[in-house]
Image (tube, rainbow, N blue to C red; front, top):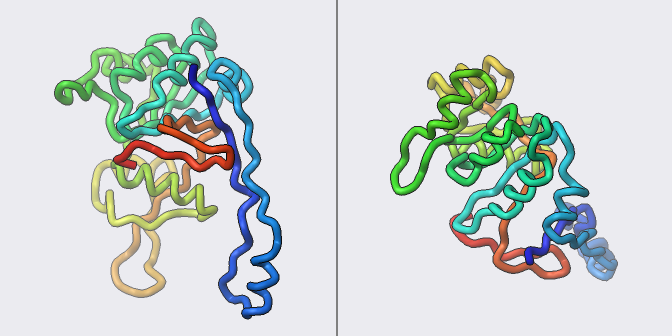
Length: 219
């Protein structure tokens, strides 16, 4: 059985920067409320938290959330939820979601066969050709920078990637990449828009009741 842990981190401690020693001492003795947690089994977790039209991000490491992905496929099979599928790499294990017609858009750095060697995936090639799925491509770095921008509450994230590329031009045309004047002088800065999925699935090796998780590297 796989236990799903959902949590938010709004119960974090207040920042200590800019405070005098007395204020820091006062804050240090205030109780810090742990993140709000909810424990569900796989079936209940998907039923409670995944809704039609959601953007679903499946985190990638050497331990992938494949069981969660297959549960989404089971619960929404033969329906038309119009999900956006996002992942560092959309590979073999994501194929059931697209084969079932559950996905209208893919956001990733690659959508292909990845094992034993990278190659075009016939299902994804056909979906792109017939227009049933829109594929939005990012570099692996900038996809992560978009997630960071959203997590930090920033309006955009500067990047040294993409500048001058066809990918940057395509993404700028849909409003996700822009070039700004550098306020510190020098060349113009390329920035990427924040990206906040509706539901993110991450497979962790272990977790505690406070929401701390051990994730298999690379992160």
